[in-house]
Length: 231
Image 1: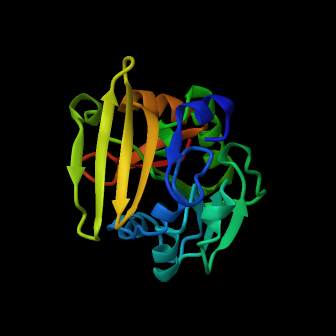
Image 2: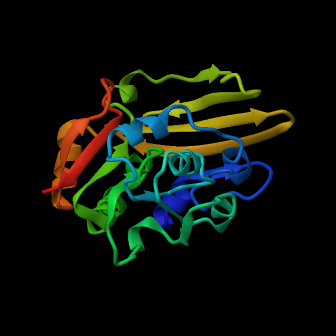
Image 3: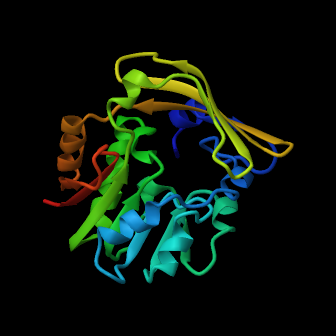
């Protein structure tokens, strides 16, 4: 997350490198896309240039490359970026990124926008604005607002040999949710504790407006995927 407050709130445990915001690099390297690249691809012109903020180990980067897009992948973790091939990679925190060029699409997914405090979220959105072309768009991923009211401890087995658990679910304040994710793959086990901030439609629109952006559409009925354009 890139600042002192976030580094206290977000932490992780387990084998291999752990990023400053608590993500386990070795676990992320096991993940594959689940339809997200196709959703993104359908929302932009063929061959659109893409700036992917918080690209991680390339779970989305590599399928987007295969779909014909030129991708610049940004992450603050060199261990994450080391897994990406075929794309230009940039080691940088999102909030301070200055590439002095623009892209058809700026992508900010993996719920990064709602795990930042107010100041950091505003900085993230300003980064999106200064890197999107005049006729381009920004695609954000956030939890649907209703999720914060209903989410409970859970366990799921995705079918890839892993087990994913959500534990220690707390609501420390209005619109806030704190929880720990537990990931098991074979004999390896990781945890990731995080704080997520609810972004209602009106609040998200207001935050985007302050950064020079506005919502143009939701990409699917749950409203998890948001397409924004320069104002």
